[in-house]
Length: 119
Image (tube, rainbow, N blue to C red; front, side, top):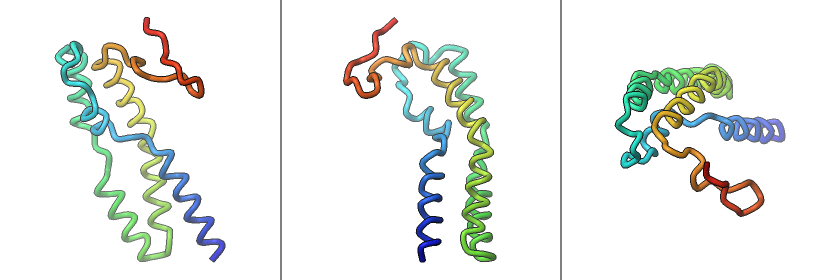
């Protein structure tokens, strides 16, 4: 029982470290931003639209793997997700850089409660 609790804790930590989907990032952008219609932003959004996150494959791998051996499918699915983290982070960065006029606007300094100065 203690081993299962440790595995579940490790699973929770692994899931919290995942990079958000680039498609979610695009959905959360401000469409009224002046950079939204720029050629660079349109190209970045097209790259996100063509991005394959392997969601179906990860789900199938997790389901089948868990039938074969407990937690094996979950571990394999997490490994596949972690392998895509670099590409997701790169696409997220590209989209934010291309589509947001001031990416740091409104962010707070960690632990200070003050807003960062604008350029």
